[in-house]
Length: 182
Ligand code: HQG
Image 1 (cartoon, rainbow, N blue to C red):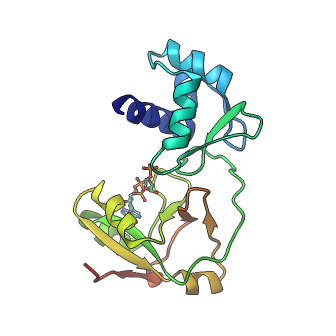
Image 2: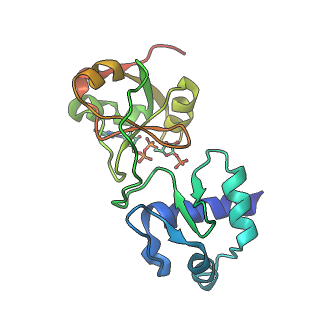
């Protein structure tokens, strides 16, 4: 289990942020060749095998990765800081979405709105509980409600990654509220 978590973290880092750190190249859609990834990872000291990759892709708690139909390539389905074009189609969001953050970011968020920081998009969820978990990664969690219905009708685009995460480029302050629900 511990191995799988380490492999998932390793793949997240390589496929979302830094393929060049092990000498891997991704295409514009974020796909990396599995037959190249495995030896490069091993050379880097990560005991990666095809079996481990398949196991992590299938059992990953958040379905973070996808393997191409021909079985030759792997990519992260969201979370990139790399300028990849995963090819998300704009889609109408639910009326509200949640964003989990930490209390220490609140002043800055209500000053600037939600911005992607290191990533390509701001990450939102349909589930309140998911937002609490995401917030807890950064400190004392606070959940913000995003008025996605009005953002959408004002022309902002939303995307829905294959693993259920909602994405948008930024959320201006006027669409944000602190969620009072416990
Ligand atoms: C905050 C996980 C100050 C934002 C999760 C967040 C997610 C601001 C942090 C995915 C701000 C960025 C992404 C502003 C936003 N001033 N802080 N104006 N605007 N922030 O980790 O959303 O496990 O890049 O609130 O499930 O926490 O990696 O984003 O706290 O889907 O697959 O800046 O990561 O998925 O932090 O998490 P992150 P996130 P994985």
